[in-house]
Image 1 (spheres, rainbow, N blue to C red):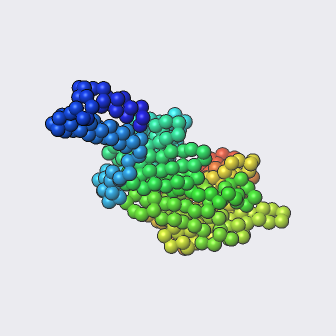
Image 2 (cartoon, rainbow, N blue to C red):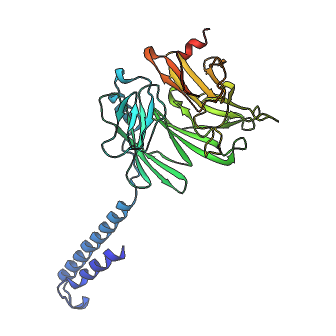
Image 3 (spheres, one colour):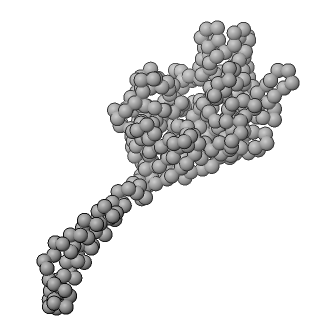
Length: 361
């Protein structure tokens, strides 16, 4: 402020013609001097206010939630509203159902891991710590839509939406129709290195932010990696710590909770954390997808793969014989006629077709 104001204040008195002392001025000269001084003073105040305004973030929203939702609805194509298989490459592009998806403004740093409706959310870096957040329908015909900005700093994330919402959290997950913001409790799950999530703030485009917590923190803990379409399924994965454990052979069980009702819809789903002391041992061990037949959840229990049906909580073992080498990877993949196939890698790749059909046998 002083760097700008001092030269102008100096000019206020050096640039005026010499009128002498105020006693020497006529009433007309005194009035002229006061008018010029006030004019320059107003200029200083305006300039300083402009400088301050440029440094402050814009407080008002650019769009309402209804307007943002309308933009997204107008950009959607019915023929592109299909379940997606998404793989992010190191070159900043994504392979989506066999089609390469990229962004013209920069490399994709993070993208939705699952989508049941053809929509994705992704991040494009604008600096080392800042990102533009975009919504897109990759198999559609319209350009992506900017929905906000994200900053990462000191193991924290700060999100600002185009509608004026501000969210601070420890981590962020990207869904098909919004974002999930995780708050860590500071504890770990099951004596592993998996951080425990105390609360999830869910921002779904066009709606108010909702908060999701465990229905029973002494029994269930929220898993930090949600490997499914939370918005399409309305489900989040939990860890059943009461049932997990064991004296000789350690057992682990997952549960699925409806984010709208807070009710457990699937429980006691066997799975095994990834061995080897990785940072997030639960990542990729419980996956789920939604089709016209409903939502199905698959879990990797190393030697066996289990599948659950969300509508009734039924759990079955998918593989007929145990894998002698164990399963290192599982996935539920969209197939023809809106079906799901179970893909796994044990000694070699394996595919179990039509997951919904397994429950009819």
